[in-house]
Image (cartoon, rainbow, N blue to C red; front, side):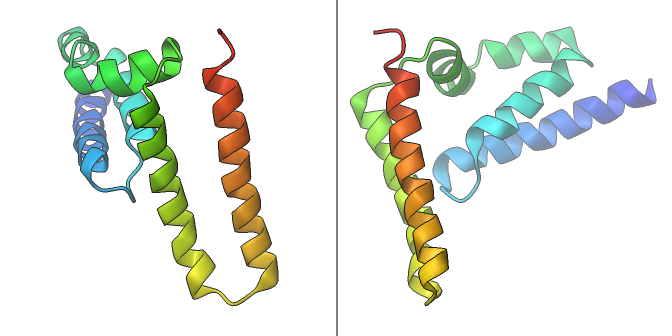
Length: 121
């Protein structure tokens, strides 16, 4: 009973953080939503069913991760957020090594994002 209550509470916190992450680019939405799904699946069928039928789950988990479908606008928005998040340390740190790593991470996002979303085509 304590484990179930703890999973429901942690799932609720994860759900709130994931939903805030939709509007705040620093918080990642997908990992929090995956955590929410796991916690609620193992604690409450009613909450899990509610969550998997929600609009945001359908957009961020069902379409993008399971069906591998995303509009060009959502892909552009995602890459823009990655670019902004990586641009901040690029500007702050005056180190060639850090900048090379940040550019490599951004290029990896571009390459693997392209591969991931074009695999079924």
